[in-house]
Image (cartoon, rainbow, N blue to C red; front, top):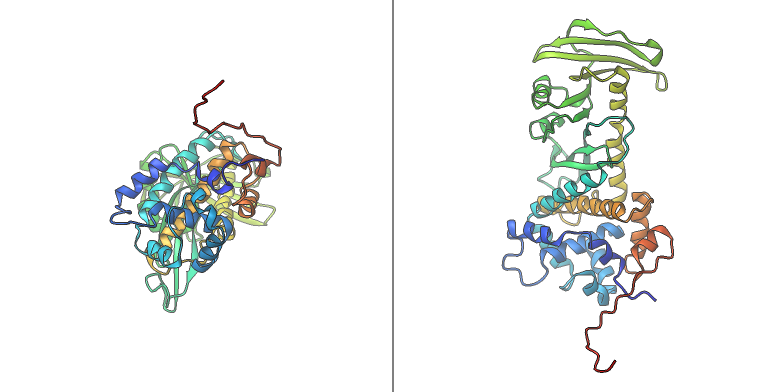
Length: 382
């Protein structure tokens, strides 16, 4: 019989506690706190994410029902709605944002060698934003429309492993294109985005940082053609031009492509002149991965129903949800688990308190862990 750690503790072993405590100290998260520390808060919120809890009352009831196992989960304080609500309201959300950024770097290194749909050595990012509707009466800080509140989740997704490398949470009024002003740029990388980010001054900034962009052109685009590149029309390509545009002082590339499956014609803009025209079209096709990512996290993480109404509580919950997503992705890679993230989360949700080897639960193999004698009592007789 396996008498080791419960599933939740085995997953949290992948959490770098030294990094977590540094983040807490950076923002004085546990200053004058005697009970229910930032780690207690994080573990409770992580439990809520993994088991799909809907409210603070739900979290409290479930954890109180397993009171004898709280210590084994790493929770050292009593769990109550008041404690959790207060922590979500006052503990700085940047603690969990900084933790997530460290996990992002770890996950990116682990997934860097994963296959991509295209044979490219460059890193490919997809940039987009999703809107999460909120009640304006309960979330008055989340300005969107006159009688409606919302927040936007601006995300830069690394398409190798679908790892979110940059996330910015704003109110619903912030236009998507403004994110280009604070977007971290990586030399040699491709940034694929839709035409909502079409601003030639900002696109030129990407080019100046030795990075590449691929986006769609608007129907009213005005330009001056300089050179036409030969193409094969049987592939769906219509034209491949080099042209100049007001607001963009250098030459730009315009690729027109007809998609027979959807019976639509698309016009792509890029500052890369070396890749084949079809590769440019395929790069934009892969932008759809960020849309699937938004759909996935809305269905599988608790980021549509919030446990608090303050701006700090909402941002803390989102960043904790992102960190849990990254923890599961890291654990999946380290244990070489072939099951999808969806399957992994579903299995974890129903086995969270079980004392079973994590690898056995997720692979269905009869994995027998090495039993280590933990007794430190010296023997008097041989």
